[in-house]
Length: 161
Ligand SMILES: Nc1ncnc2c1ncn2[C@@H]1O[C@H](COP(=O)(O)OP(=O)(O)O)[C@@H](O)[C@H]1O
Ligand SMILES: [Mg+2]
Image 1 (cartoon, rainbow, N blue to C red):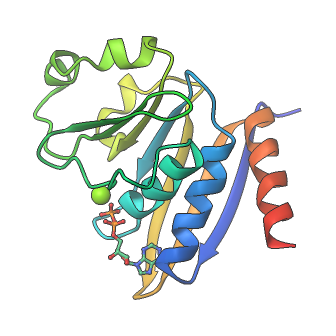
Image 2 (cartoon, rainbow, N blue to C red):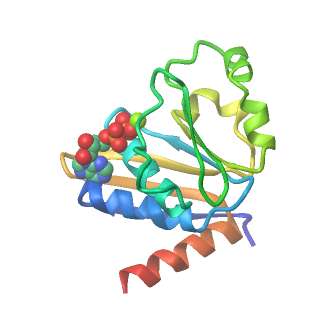
């Protein structure tokens, strides 16, 4: 049996990407890492907004891209660390930012542009590759530990029904 499993989906609106994020967020727990990759405008921040809600981050918090701050933190069922490492100059800066503490803290860590820090992403992370198909369509390929992906897959099927 393979240890890794995959979900492929195409969303036809920003709202659908947000809802996919919410479903993933509902199925996350303390210590999970979600590594997002894909070009600018492919939906990573939109998805993270939904994920945050699924993790219990209150509606009062606007989920914005941490493009300049590099990391935003939100309280939820467990703490959410939302990183955007696009502007990171090297991995040393990642550690200065407190990355190792975030990973140890028992929160959930979401990383935009995670492919830029591939060697620093835990092997058991959920990885999501975003592809811009056209103005309104995005393809998402979600990979990760079998059990986790199976759980997310079941949740997505239930919500579609
Ligand atoms: N199917 C879709 N999924 C996600 N975003 C979409 C979709 N269709 C249109 N959009 C738009 O694309 C933009 C996605 O931007 P964003 O989430 O910031 O991307 P990234 O963080 O990858 O740069 C948003 O303005 C959103 O409204
Ligand atoms: Mg973004």
